[in-house]
Image (cartoon, rainbow, N blue to C red; front, side, top):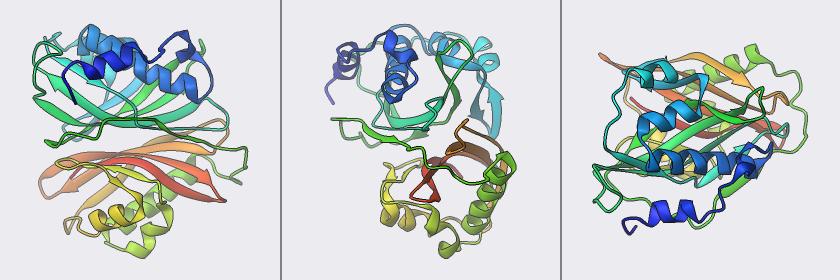
Length: 274
């Protein structure tokens, strides 16, 4: 991607007050506005403006309050910019998620990127009717991503997911984690889809059942993956979960978004680090 094109695309993308709308256009525009504001100000200012007061980021294997973490952080000169490539929203329009490529430059938008990867954001409408980022977890990669031509969108229908509640979501997530750490492909594969997206450190995202299966079958032996918490949308058709991944003496995290579609629960997006 040419230097400056990332930011120019955002400036010309029609980002407007529509970012507060309770629909997928509002969700996508919220992410674009977050990216534009951060690139034109500082990373600290961006996250302080767009993270929810209870929003979390992940550092050193722990989920921490983003507002508290960034208030303590110095405002650096680096430029972080990104753009959504994939977005999903609940039928209730109050919760959704986005993912796509990011780049980090040392001083100006014309600089060569010194960092790349893929972000993953979970969003929720607050009491004021504004989209706020409630969980954010990125992966790094040295390989440049393909330029986004069009955002892939999933809008869930009003299919009722039965008796799913917060406890049920946690149990489902724990079952998935057990299958992963046991390397039981038959246990976790039914929860993936042809359009599932998996962000990993050191490589481009794995997309679809076959690519994801190739990656997850090669997970290190002895991983301990533990569910920590999560939340459901008001329609109970989309939820996010997160937890820890222990690999020997190293502790990292995962963030995952579940959706109810085609009468089954699926992991549509996740970032997994070990």
